[in-house]
Amino acid sequence: MNCAMTSPPSLFHTVSGEVPEEPVVSTKSGLLFERRLIERHILDYGKCPVTGEPLTIDDVVPIKTGKVIKPKPVHTASIPGLLGTFQNEWDGLMLSNFALEQQLHTARQELSHALYQHDSACRVIARLKKERDEARQLLAEVERHIPAAPEAVTANAALSNGKRAAGDEEMAPDAKKLCPGISAEIITELTDCNAALSQKRKKRQIPETLASIDSLERFTQLSSHPLHKTNKPGICSMDILHSKDVIATGGVDATAVIFDRPSGQILSTLTGHSKKVTSVKFVGDSDLVLTASADKTVRIWRDSGDRNYACGHTLNDHSAEVRAVTVHATNKYFVSASLDSTWCFYDLSSGLCLAKVSDDSEKVDYTAAAFHPDGLILGTGTSQSVVKIWDVKSQANVAKFDGHTGEVTSISFSENGYFLATAAEDGVRLWDLRKLRNFKSFLSADANSVEFDPSGSYLGVAASDIRLYQTASVKAEWNLIKTLPDLSGTGKATCVKFGPDAQYVAVGSMDRNLRIFGLPGDQIANADDDSAQDS
Image 1 (cartoon, rainbow, N blue to C red):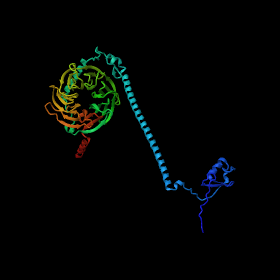
Image 2 (cartoon, rainbow, N blue to C red):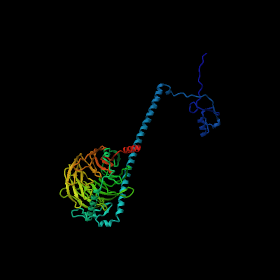
Image 3 (cartoon, helix red, strand yellow):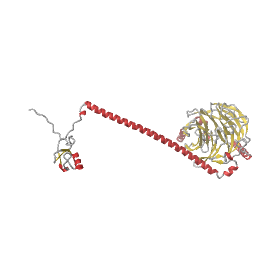
Image 4 (tube, rainbow, N blue to C red):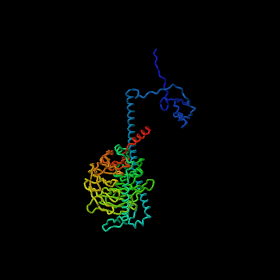
């Protein structure tokens, strides 16, 4: 018997011609429909889509059928068809990925542009803040000096915005400013100060707290502090206020920074100069700071409260770069030295230039200056390799030291007043002020700074490295105690200063960091622990 297998009959939708998933039949026309489609049509039109007769949902009856499996599309029924499908899907995926990469690139460009705009906005805000602060300082100076204007004009020292008004000053026939000179009262004051300091120096003893030679031999770097800007690195000058252990630095970035060494915090940043700050000095234990700059000016700063220093005077008596400022022992007067071949003697309270001195016998450019500890002698270094000694009372050149090669970069008097140390390109020379002769030299190429410690026991030299010497007499040997490396990587240490009782050495270099060398604290702590255990 031949049996033929037959497949169940398929029911097709009257309108779409496809096999319905939920078939229903109209009781009026007997036509087959997809349930969801005919119900939607009845709700919209209320009639049969084929015959047009009125039709309701109650007129359609569902039909029970077996589950219908839809046949696969022809193109997926073979391996080539599947590969083609996969290829199409892969192409679609790659196109989508390419579109996403384009969107990512566009987003990155937009983000970069937004960041650039943000950085530009921050720079503009910083510049506006700086201009605002300068304007506030100028306004404060105007308000401070307006009440004193009549008196200042009378004294030929009128001030405007912290600057001496050029039009109100007495002018000489050759268009040079006239200075009133150092009066007899001031000379008497300087002489009395000299006598008092000389008498006091005879009774002075080296403090017991002074660091020992053994301690200096173990000095190593304790800390490094980035005080100045990275785009214009370099520390040109430095001074230490021993009573408060505060350090002031002058930088290539045209700012001076007041730094508290014990806490490691910046107390204030003095802005106002337009070029590098070549010299910075504290005035005794007061709240005054002096700065000299390559912009030809000297500024007097005062702490106006909350460690906010304001410029009290801007002095424009020099016509070239000002290289040095040095404060007299009375803390009432100071001297500035400039490349315009002059040095000026100032009254600190008024900012008035009392005397402007030049050497008519030869033209020299002054690069360094320092008062003798007794205050009646001034030492100056020059770019012509000459060191000149001046009598402050008469402003006369009383001695001249030759022998250096290159510019004299730094000078320092010893505490006992007998010795003068000078630094230049060929190294450091020591001079006996009693016999006016050079008695010792230290060869050190490009010596940038030389400094006696306040007790006169040690001498520091900054060049390509930092060297610490033990001082002695004219005939005795000045022994090298310690050589400290220049860790800035620039090969040029620009300034060196001893801290209180020589407990540390502060070094500035041609990077933006202030470095502190001293006895490691852990050694002191270990020594204390050992003593405690022994007890």
